[in-house]
Length: 129
Image 1 (cartoon, one colour):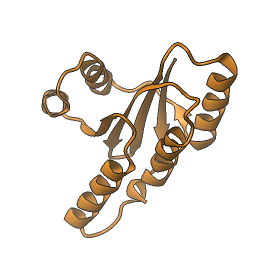
Image 2: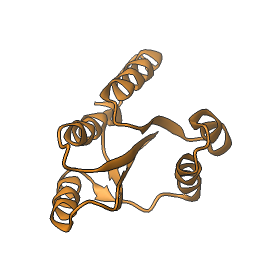
Image 3: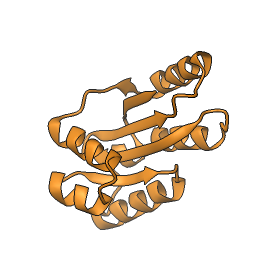
Image 4: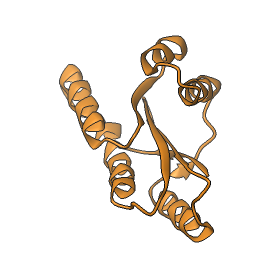
């Protein structure tokens, strides 16, 4: 099962990551978090062993927080590159996207990205709230 959602800000993105970390019944393969100027793209890939009820419940949870998205070609290519085990740094260079996290869910990576971005700007944009 593959879920690709657009979320408006960092707080919502962190809620998804925390939900995944707190729900061991969801057989997570990986999660990818990409920051864009206007929001966040989150891809969650679950193993095929997930039951239909759990899959639908998770989809409903994601739809409460964000909207399903069809990203542009650069983000799609970046997601493909990560799935084929290319280095996140190389994927960021090649496709010019900000990959905040890929693999196991990690709230600290998202928090660190948010702190560094805000420190560099001197203020907190809406998407990083």
